[in-house]
Length: 242
View (spheres, helix red, strand yellow):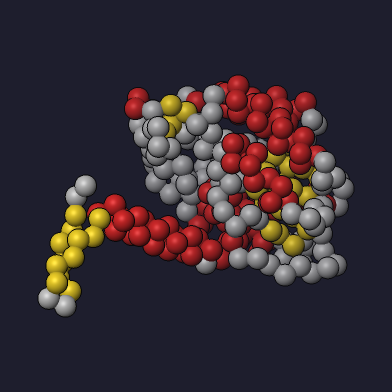
């Protein structure tokens, strides 16, 4: 074992490197959790009891449009989201009951996929596709999504599915050619359960909404606001029962 050497009160002491590393990692993790908890998108909101409750479940794309969606639905609905990136369907299967909680939801706008089609190494770190494997196969994704949809349907809420958004060429850890496969699998599940679709990809293409960078899956605050306004229209209509 490697040791660090230091002096204290004139005496020599040895501290194991692994212990120091463990302490530093714990501190970094605690800091990361604290920083995430302070994000305004993750802050709990106080419900207006006269308004319906909407839950947004999704990846970082949905995090980007959470605040503008709340603004667009101000006075129309209480818009909540889990205090985290909902990542892939495997994470969803573990956390879905916590995300749903004990309250009644009138509408749930949800998505998984961008993290399922991601390539990672054996430690779960995003890597070049040639250096890793996907978080989920298409078959696993379809199976997991089926289970999640069945759980969401048991809430009695109106459900709206948002397909996985575009993967540009050169996006880190992802391949554009994988996107249609995963979205087709999702469409099979969503159609089978007769769930409404917020076709965000069609809106992105029609309005030529740019990513934050040409090779990045994320959107700028301005682009996210436009996505939110479009989705808010569909949510309003669904809440009115149209």
